[in-house]
Image (cartoon, rainbow, N blue to C red; front, side, top):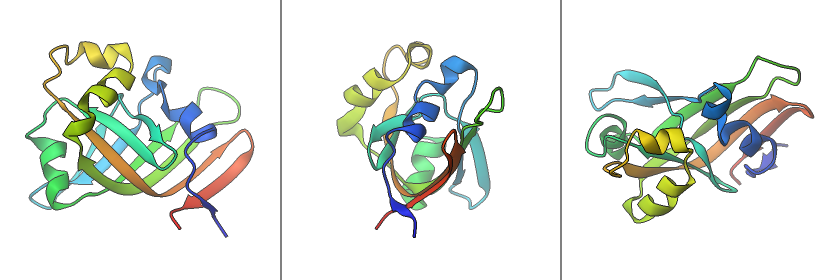
Amino acid sequence: MPDPIDLSGPVQEALDGAVLRGHQPALAYVREDGSPAATFRGSTHVHSPTELAIWVRKRDDGFAKAIAKEPRVSLVYADFSGPGVPYVSVEGRASTRPELNDEVYEAIVEPEREQDPEKKGIAVVIEVDAVRGFGAAGYFEQHRN
């Protein structure tokens, strides 16, 4: 039986600030026309024990626009540079959350803030339905109850 969702610990250690270690999570989503898309999201970080947050620079286009129609997303992250390979695979539902703009923007790493210094983007929160991975303690799997 999988554990309930708790993104603290190994998931947070892997994702938060990954771009500063030379790695970025890849995010897959469905474009408005139904075609698949995959992008790197260096601003990805753990927002709460059950949510990820991303700062999206294009607030009215691309990913931010697509999730209004199809919110299901998948994210994958791996760092193969050392022992205890952290690997994380996430499934969830994304939504724009403009009321969290200041909070999410302040939580992202400085190189990501530098790409949108005027804060023209928008906060996106992913409610995590499932997370699987592998880390120093071995395989783990969590699902929303």
